Image (tube, rainbow, N blue to C red; front, side, top):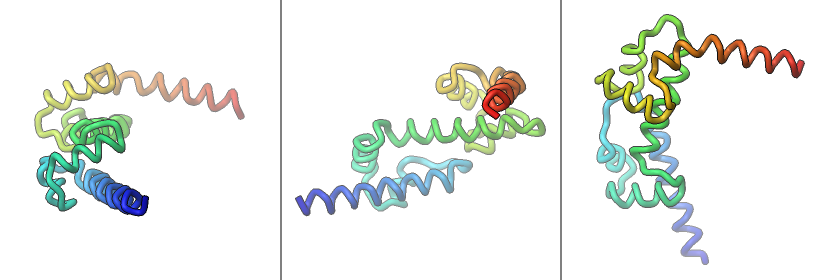
Length: 130
């Protein structure tokens, strides 16, 4: 039992390091190999413990994290979709739009257009509960 708990805590430490690396570097272009090198593990081993713990691969998590950050940035009226794309680590705006649509179900421009509606609905909900 002690072996498993120490192995689990090591796994948690590796996963936390990977998550920190993603959070600190999501705006840069990097490979999963670079992330694995940072954590100090073989890419496939890190990917397998990551998937076991979080239910998704490192690549899936990274894409979803970047798109979540993109959604936050799209709420800014001053940033173009190209600016947002580059800010979350996509130099190719077309690829960014494809990934965004796959994860969010709408294109970045559709998402941006719907923000005023979302904010109105959030305000209505908020006012109803005040």
